Length: 210
Image (cartoon, rainbow, N blue to C red; front, side, top):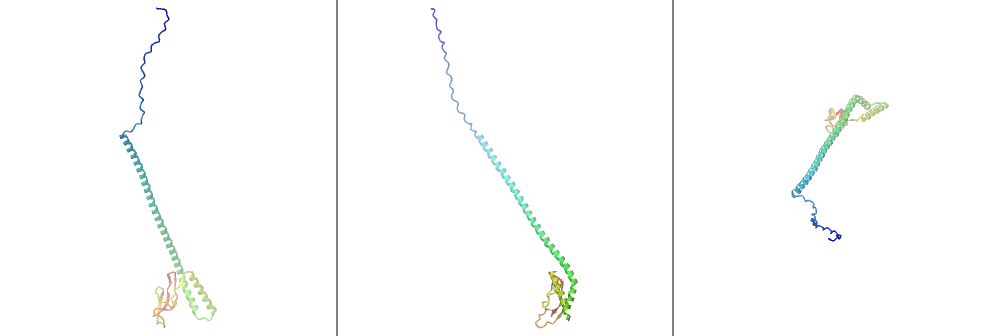
């Protein structure tokens, strides 16, 4: 062999297998619920919806029941108030009547004690008297007594010339009627009668035409 510098030959490159080309993976798609699972989900939502409406319906019924109960109680209280007001009004009127009755009883008793004095003054005023000043004094006394009786709501029973009424008059005598007089007419008053309100203090004593 000649002494030549031999260049080393480049190493032969071994054939490398080509990299495998992988097919691109399909893009991930959201999984669709299975039909059975979808039906189950819809049923649950429907149930929750029914439960919600049922709850609201029960709450509404409860509020309505409370409102009805409140209205009933209000009606009862209103009726009780009206009854109480009516009872109080009746009590007030009854108390007023009783007070008036007691007052009239006291006045009637007092007037009965002085009617005899008034009768005497009446006879003195109607009697013939030559002393005019004396007679005038008696008449003035009778006038004052009449005003006092009027203040006490006491009035004289009007009997002269009126038809006889046994509710207000006592007949002590009957006489033949004068010309033009009707039977049953009061022709004379012996003693005046008095009443307070609709209550008789003393009946009038009268003479009646037959």
